[in-house]
Image 1: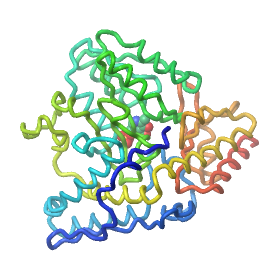
Image 2 (image 1 turned 90 degrees about the horizontal axis):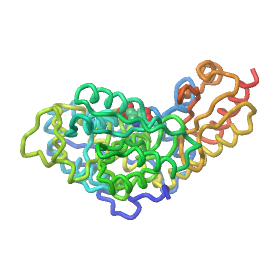
Image 3 (image 1 turned 120 degrees about the vertical axis):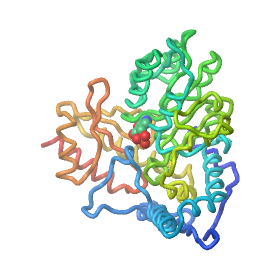
Image 4 (image 1 turned 45 degrees about the vertical axis):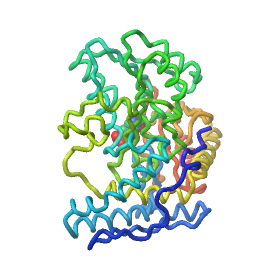
Length: 414
Ligand SMILES: Cc1ncc(COP(=O)(O)O)c(C=O)c1O
C-alpha cells in the first residue's frame, strides 16, 4: 500500500527547466544527473563518498545531499551572495511557489495547506505551542514517539496545565489493531489531540496513522502526525490520511539541504493557531503566518525543485522498493548471525533495521563498527533495551550491506 505515491497520478508543475531568468540574475537549475531508469550503482554514484571510505548507515538522522542537489544549492547560495539577496528571493517567488506546489502534489496536500519550516521539531513546536489548549486538556502521545514532542508536552503541562497522556506501546509485538485500540481507548472527554509518529525513529515501524485518524475524527479529536522519516521514504498522501497536522524533515529521506522541513495544516485548522512571533493580521487565516521568522537561508527554499527533480528522476515507488530490498538483505544477513535479535518488523517498516545483541551492550560495539570496520550506525534504546539502528539508503550498494553483515559477524565472534 505504501508504495503508491500520490505524485504518480498528478501532473508535474515544472519540468526540464534549464535556467531561470531573474532580471539581471540567473538562477541556475542543475540537471538531475540521472538517465531514466538509471542503475542503482549510477544512482549511488550521485552521492559523495567519504574521503576515508567510511560507510554511512545513519541517514535516518540526517540524509545525504546528492551531487546535483548540492551543486544547485551552492550555485543558489552564490546567486544570493552576488546580488541583493532579498531581490533574488523576491524575483524568484513564482519559481519557489511552483516548487512548493510540486511538493504539495507529492505529499497529497493542497498547496495552501503546506509551508516550509526548518525541521520536524520546529513544526511540532509550532503546532503544540500555538494551539489554544486550556488547562486540563489532554494530549495522547505514545512511548514510541521521538523524545522531543514529549519535552514540548511536558513544558506545556507546566505552563498551561495540559495533561500529557502516555500510551504504552510494545513495538513489534503490538499489532496495528492493538496500537489503534490503545490510542482510541485513551480518549476521554478532555482529549484534544493525538500525536502519532508515522515512522518510529528506533525500530523504524510504520504506524497505522490512517486508522488512528479515522477513529480520532469520529470522536472529534485532532491528530498531529510526526512524519519526520516518512516523506521521501515511502508514499505519503496527507489528505488520504485525513490528519489535521503533518510535519516532516525533508533533509532526511528527501535529501534536501539541512534545515528544510514541511508543515501541513488542514485549512480549517489554520485560523485557530497563533504563532508567538508577530505577523501581519491579514495572514491570520493563511499558513504563511508561520514564515514571519525574519531572514532565513533563502537557498533552502530555492533548492526544493532540484530535490524533487532528483527523487522524481529515480521514481518514487522504485526508490521505496529499492530501500526495502536493501533492508531485506540486511535483515536476512543479520538473522543468520547467532545472538542477534532483530527488533524491526519487516512487514511494517522500510529503510531502518533495529537490532540487539544477546550478550553485548550496543554502546560498546558502536565504536567498534566505526573504528574497525569504518561503519557509522546509531546506538539507541527502547524501554531500557539497548539496540543499534542501521539505516539503509540509495548511496549504499549490496556490497556495503554485505560489509555491515560481515562486520557484525566479526564483532559477535570477537
Ligand atoms: C520520529 C522523529 N521525529 C522528529 C525528529 C526530529 O527531526 P529534526 O531534528 O529534523 O527536527 C526525528 C529525528 O530523527 C525523528 O526521528
